[in-house]
Amino acid sequence: MSLYLGQAIGPLVAGFFVTFWFPLPFLIGAGMGVLAVVLIYFQVPETLETDSEQVEEPTLAPTD
Image (cartoon, rainbow, N blue to C red):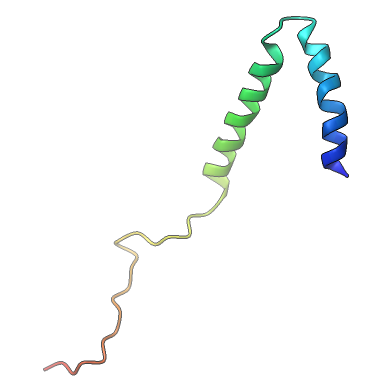
């Protein structure tokens, strides 16, 4: 439902912003994209282990 709401309201809001300055809707969209990237970078936890966090794999070969 929110997808359709965004598709309906997005052009309306962009039409409102274009009355002030033509590139304004594009700049707002770019700013929202940058904000999304920054939030994802800081809010989503890293899933890969770094070299210092990796545990040595056990081997089946006997050690002397």
